[in-house]
Amino acid sequence: MAKGTNRFLKVLPDLTSDVPKLSSYFSHTLYALLESEAFEPSDLVWVAPSASGNEEEDDMVFVEEYYKTIAEFLILWYEKKANRSWKETVRYYTKTGLRDTFK
Image (cartoon, rainbow, N blue to C red; front, top):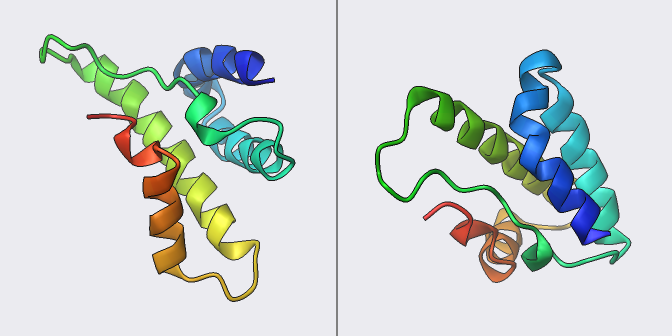
């Protein structure tokens, strides 16, 4: 399941140029998959900007879609369970490695 999701992640920025709401739809799908324990967040391979430090503007648009997807996923994670705090959400973000996605 993680392999297919990772393949989709690689093309997500290209697809969102045609369907802007796709990152939002994908974050809902991602939430459902992770809640069903199909795989762990650490199994996801997010495409990082080039290591050369010479990111072009087009590359930054790609990264922006990943940030949007992660942000919408975290909002869902926070909202879907009663009595969940933002502190718990930040702890989850850190513990699962999502924080280290783009360093």
